[in-house]
Image 1 (spheres, rainbow, N blue to C red):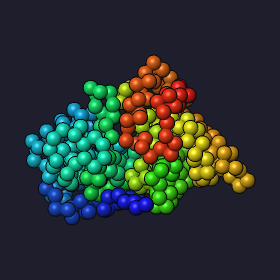
Image 2: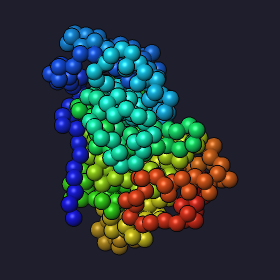
Image 3: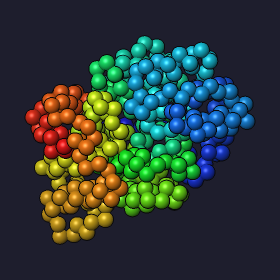
Image 4: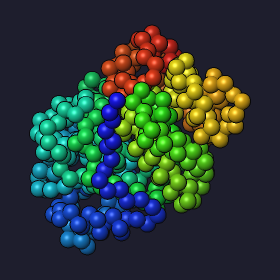
Length: 382
Ligand SMILES: [Fe+2]
């Protein structure tokens, strides 16, 4: 079976790497950037700082701070209008998954035309997007380096999964110094998103030896560093290890894809506007309990990567240990206990389940599920 490995051409990482990144950006010969960010980073002055660093390299910019959490079609359209008005020739996303995904939507529509919903699905665009440089400020989604773009269709209450090689950024930047300001809750949620990427990629039907290596190293780093990154946000070593971990998890899922945790979490995000990482963290043990029937040996590897001594354990005992280790980590970093606390309603489960079964992320889940089985997993997570 053949496989294709996608990753940005250039990826700059490490504490205080922003200067090196600016030199690389200057090398592309770009004239004017649309900086896509959120209001938090705009108010904190981070977007202005990036604009100033670009100006020092003779690159003009215009700041669009309208990327909401769970970015919508309207956010993409507003950003695209500003890009066209300001005659920008590239896009720089600054933030976590939401600005990156919004920027991908803008950059894709800028060259391909049409409406962002035209590109829902896999490889629906015809042309490369406008050059996109992604400067990451969270350690979780890995959207700064993936070909995944998730945009909420507010009219349908669904998150559209746009999986397209053309939304891969040109350059990704992960400077842990930009991550130190993340509050505890965001650090915990984004870290669990990364753990979910690694585990879903590891048990995926599309896993390869390359994605396996990335996933296992990511799980080890998250298991060893996430508690500390949450407890001591200023610990730059823990932040750097989490930056590498989420990038490795991104390398894994960008190529092995995901599973039902993401397919189901997208529906919770689209329906109730809930944080992506928290939805994943709550669903992860329940989906893996369902998957264990076919993935027990792989889940035993996950337990080992999370520090469990699995010698002498059967595959089933190992998968139980992996699920327990995931739950322990979630508890330690104060992830909410279940969907009820998050405000989800059991009455919505049938429609959430039927939408989850239409999400492209579920196609590589190791154990196919029926409508009834997805409903049962949702209910177990309440
Ligand atoms: Fe995710």
